[in-house]
Image (cartoon, rainbow, N blue to C red):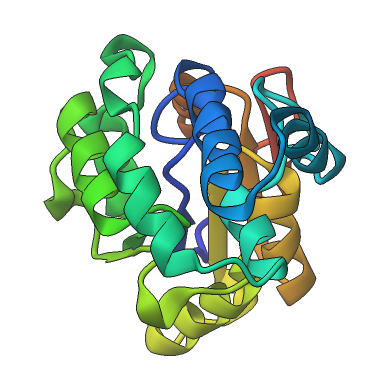
Length: 219
């Protein structure tokens, strides 16, 4: 961990408990598919489920936005729709990461927020959980230049920007396929948290992190 020179952290399900919003987000995706792509409700639900998108937290869950990208759905339109329907008031602040936790990460290395969500939703979330945007060296959202079916492309972009090697980079998130696997494949390190507050346990064991019920660390 002493060699870490860049930390990339996810937002949805990482800064706040995904259980707070996942059912609402799933319903939004179903409604979008029905309204603009003429899906029947049952077909929309099945299509999402078949692609590992659920109304509940699951180990194999994937990103709705990345799935829509793979299906050539108009992501700009989806971004606009979900920004209007994003249920951020449902987020429980007491279950979310605190500014103090994030400051401890920022003291180790530049802390970049990398999310498939939109810039306006990032502001809503950070305001809801009481975290300042200034904690992050950079906020990279799902905006025009950052749309990719995998975070690997964006992680590589950030490593080049900060002039760091993969082995000097740590990705923190809540989903293995979305947040850990791309970084591991690039040769970097990854931390998957079961709940946002479990970051505290990792910070306590940062000199010798090891897999436990609260987190999995990939070195």
